[in-house]
Length: 309
Image 1 (spheres, rainbow, N blue to C red):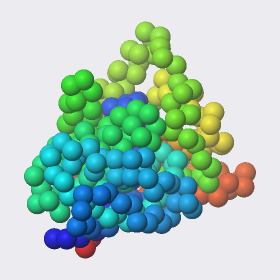
Image 2 (cartoon, helix red, strand yellow):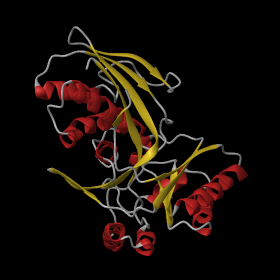
Image 3 (cartoon, helix red, strand yellow):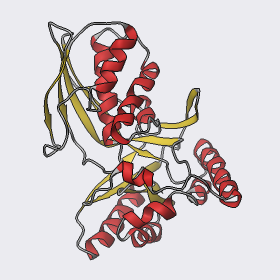
Image 4 (spheres, rainbow, N blue to C red):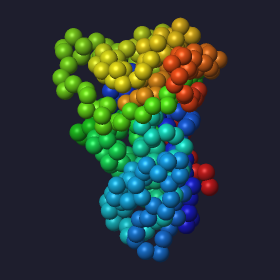
């Protein structure tokens, strides 16, 4: 192949209690990239759509191209590529916008080169896109975008991650209010230390979440969706957060929290019908204060990136 079109999905990171270690992929939204081989060794971003002109075309500074450059350097391949990036989700949404671009780009190039690396081996390169986006090469967005499903990052040094099974009838509702939260700012306001009491409570919920997902124990999943460390701080950046969260649980959600750095808010529900009711309730709370929203209801995406053309 000389060209390829790839879609990579949005993600929900942290998943309440699992800051920087939990992430899951959803069916939509996502990003699309078109990558074509060149007759030289240059990496060129030809065009970006859907970003309102906010993203740079400099390949050394864009999340779609940096992982490709790192990848080509690692495998020692001097092949150039033209890249078209179609952003299909809002920037600064808390849905892994930068990671979807990173994953789609490096996955596409690996395919065009007849897959010298396994898909899971692309993760360190995709993480470099996150470093460009927010200054931290975390994997809780890029890992599920790349591998699909629900991913746990056990360790960063050395990098160690694994996937866990999830209930078939678990649905995710995501509501994105029309405001922007910069990921770097959302990380900057976090405290570097937490109390022993909060750490113990958080670890209990991390264990409960994994056990609940693997055993399809919906009640345990809901009880474990409590974040003692990150949500209390980041919630101040999201207008109407607590009202939206209460509306979600009142409508039948198992639990509700911030997606990634925000401002998107996600909820888990048992079944699509409940998830859709939760969607309506969450949107209504934002509408009360004049905030427009985009919303999505999805099962957990176990596929990850896919070839469109």
